[in-house]
Length: 419
Image (cartoon, one colour):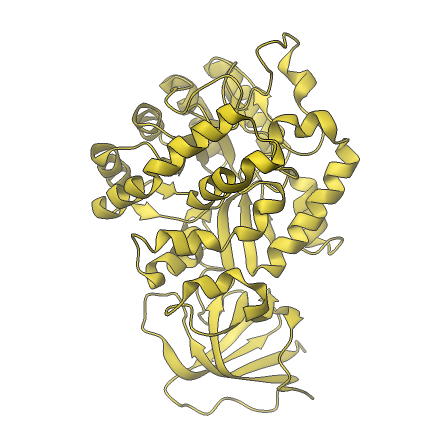
């Protein structure tokens, strides 16, 4: 018989859109939520473990729609030149563990991590969040995933490591189609394409539009045939519009969009995944980690307009998800993204973007993202009320209990009774 855990006297923020509930209780059996009681109903007794959470809030496990587990250094331009793949893989395992201890129980890797890391987490070889992988992002020659410097004329494959920030350079619809199929064959959960220039790439600008519509559509057709979708790195209006016309489901970044493009995102039903925290972190500390001046310039350009783009998207009614895109040691700031978004969204809306909305984006809304009976028991017991101060989620000391799939991976509460 599956063991039961009862959490009592919680301030319940279930992220369904309902109002919070005082003195609620949640019963977990095995890996799932068996019962949620509100309104002062007495909780069921006789459970294997009962934890009094008086004075604490209970929220769903957080999710992040844009991580790079393979970005083990802040200066990813030189990472593959400095780190052997075995060392990179060990760093990646540590990043996964740290991510779970920050309260993120499901994350979507936006390029670099392959199925082996997902399998290692699922088998219990390493501790970490539930992981959705993209494997190698697809990039055009000279695009955001082409890591060659202008002085380097070797084939791009030479600069693609076996672990870390990996990509595949492919041009033309047929080559894109083949590369997308190969990523799916290798276990990718979704396909990632680079549809615009980027801050960290050496040979382009944020305003550059990359891949033709036919090339992006080839990736979309392959993904849809496999019952999945395409996520696209896209900053500017032209690249975002190309992606929408091609049928991309998830627009990453979007800092340079205008009101009209934001409205197009809303009408298409696509998701926008802002990653505002990475520009703040890189602008403030990137130079100290050796990030080149030209990259910092592009980071600052994206930072200056990011909030305005979010306002456009919010005003248009676009579906706003939540990502971080942090690199190396800066990855400990994932929850800061939620606070930045409250310049436009309410605290509840920001929290929902990192729970229920992300779950819908992942196609996992029946399993995660809200605290409802039958769903996986991904739960956080938090000291304080994140609706009054969402910044408290940034301090892992405020996360008193972290539960993933019914298993408690952290518990520092004293009021625990195990039968």
